[in-house]
Amino acid sequence: MNSKRIYGMAAMGGLALLSAITTFALAGARAAEFSPEGREIFLEGCVEQVSDRISQDTAQNYCQCVLDGFSQDNVSRDDVRTFIAEANNPDEWPSQVQNVIRDCLQEYRQ
Image (tube, rainbow, N blue to C red; front, side):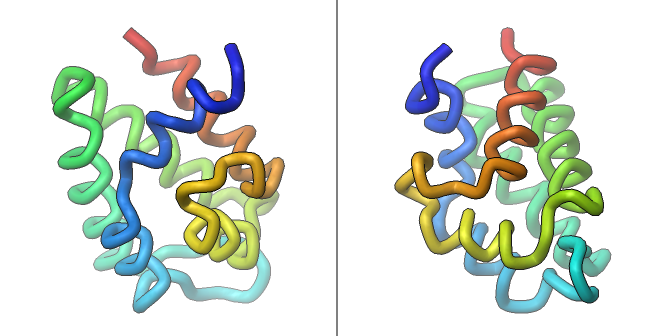
């Protein structure tokens, strides 16, 4: 599967959602940590953006997978910030972000 197809779905989260994440959701030192409010905003916005292309249940599972992946130690705040800044340019996403999105898409693809 090529990167454009893999990451096209991931980019559906939209810049507004990603901006909301950076505004108040990212905390912590190295790892991308999200406040409870930031987690909720991410999940709601992500599900809203992707549920027109996949079932509601699959959208919720996919978005939770991405959020959980972003919260792991191998994805830093800087990785998430780069992802946000380059939301429309998947080739520039950090490899850790690409790996999370790819893994979640493979798991929840219909």
